[in-house]
Length: 165
Image (cartoon, rainbow, N blue to C red):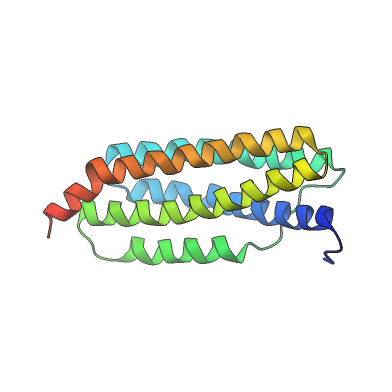
């Protein structure tokens, strides 16, 4: 795809995040099953439901700009998820594994926060107000998930993992 203007970049990044979200829909159930903490498992399962909604929102944005929903390989998400797969295959104590799951999940969230923040800004500059609103909703949910993961890590999981040393 040739990136001649902001609209082209917007579409390119939309395709990227669409593929990323679809990858997450596949990966999150496996991650939830590996979580030992019930609170962490519930957080991952809740985010899976949100991620399915994020896919639908991205599809709506594609429709708004007259494009068929399609993805392009999101190498960043593939890499983050590959790291997560490696972690899940390690022999680790329960709390340490959960701390690693949170670390990987926050890598995902930070990538998504950056992407949705840019997409919302691009949409605003392109006069795509409804798209900007939908992308902003997703951005807010990604930020909330990141805060929840931080709280869970700091108040419970990392404390338990430290006690295992």
